[in-house]
Length: 379
Image 1 (tube, rainbow, N blue to C red):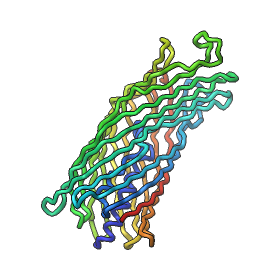
Image 2 (cartoon, rainbow, N blue to C red):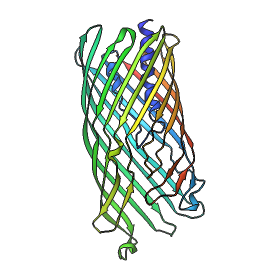
Image 3 (cartoon, helix red, strand yellow):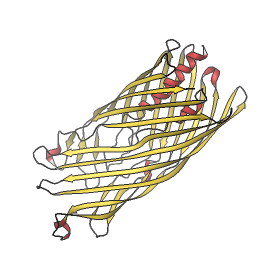
Image 4 (cartoon, one colour):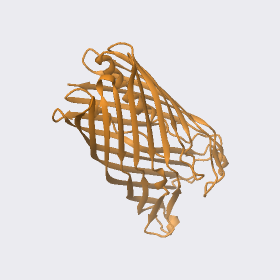
């Protein structure tokens, strides 16, 4: 197999794994930092992309009968970008950006004017470096770096009373690190990589705006200082890929996410009894992906992958198993760049809440459609 064909496959394979992982992952998982750019040829590389995800899931049971038959899941967009620079022949670093966690839901009451909108995202900006050593027939890589994660949360409850609403806004910032090891034999597109990413714990600050009458104030609304506490998981991911025949590449990954650390999102204010508690009590999650890619020629390659994401629910929420089929491809243009695109379809299994204040809530099986496009250049 020519090196040109193998390089085309490698680029497309990384893109497919990114697409497959965002179609509706367990917990709040969305995108992953594009640290695979460290292994790309070229002294200076840039690539960026955006993924659009549209999930649909309807209530079959709900303590509020007005929500039965409605879908609460919102569409969302995941941006991603990466820049890699070779510092020496054996040392290179990559700056990455991605929306790595998030959630968005709207609970609309068809027969009333009330509506609850809830959205949060975390955005990771990171610097990861790799040091390469020649070992045996291939290359041993030591990987590591740090990241900054920004947290934003917004919940608006428009009450079915003219002018009445409650709103919670929170933001925070935390820091963490990742460390890993990899071994690669570029001539046969073989690479095995193990990467650890630390988790984060938040004490995000903001405000909770409530109707004045709720706290005995004559004002229409009052903004109270608020603190929200919660946890996001550490992860360990193993990635494998290898050429298996001329023009063919097999790839896969297994990822463990420590979602059991997220017991609840607890919001407190300066007034006792004024706040909120969202209980999750999740279990740890596993995500498994496998796929194959094929280089049709030196410019065009395509691939297909299948992902299973284990739900993390334990009876307190609706985060169930998902299965995602993704197809993608890449095209190298005359300007030296590479256009990448893909689509994914997810099957979302049904779920029931059997514990806590929302017990008696059920959702039917649903689906999610994801589309992604990106562009890469190198010098």
